[in-house]
Length: 361
Image (cartoon, rainbow, N blue to C red; front, side, top):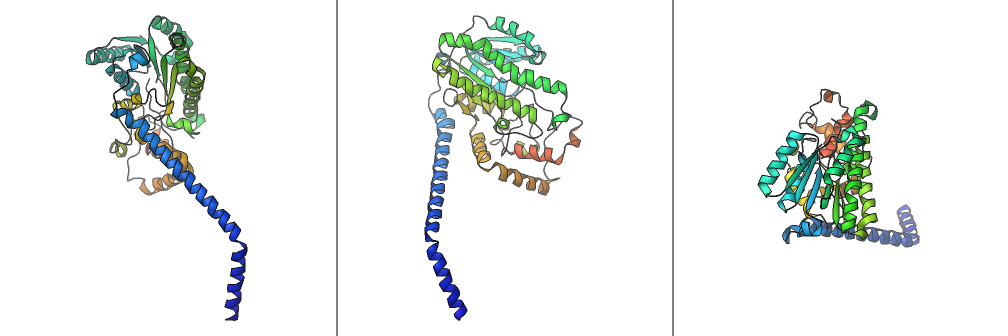
């Protein structure tokens, strides 16, 4: 009994001496809770303001705001085509740039017939290097280019270690993902500055948000596009130019076709048409956005819990292997993909980490 009393007295003395520390810890905890609560409220408000309110009010007059013509690269499939169609639905004339002349003419005809706007095409293989840009500059000369959409891009056939990526693929990533956007902006921006209005939309990727193992060169190229766009916004906002960096997560395009599991989650993996409809509504409102409401939620979760969620999905992968279809790959080497590669694809498919890319040449 004496031992118990002695322990109790010792505990009281220690507790009394630690009161100031406990109060300090309580203040730190209260500050942290308040900070997180404010962040959640601000994120929720931003989500509503960006993705829902614009859809409840009348649509902005993009022609009056920016100009009559829009140029879209990589416009024959996926997000590029859907974005061009969405702009055409708002009355803009469209210049489509891609490498396949037959597809270009088909898409141009479909857009012209459906939306009663003018269309033009420029056949250009961006992987061929700098010689194509003089021809593009000449074709766009004297046009009232109001919006430029940098969508063209190339992607790994599947996640690979850097030394397994061919040199041709690396050069394509440099020429198509990086050089194309830079030089197209260089072509159209002087006219926008002269008219004191215009918009440049560059479609990056969720993989720009952090280094992405087994997509090293691809994610680095998308990080370039993101930083390039944000820097341009600082440089040219005072001249009437709006520059937007779009960082989509998984979109159901031909480049990154989801597995059957993800096809059951259209709210998580939207079609290009749905994505483009949401993304265009953010034009002029947000300088950097995922473009789609659920992607914004995924980006917030990823930013807050990236390490924890990656570990959780590694565990999930081990528990569901053989029960859930993996991402579809058409490359013969796909069965040799490492566990880390498939974990990365599963994780990214659920959009908790990074986007595998959603642009089409």
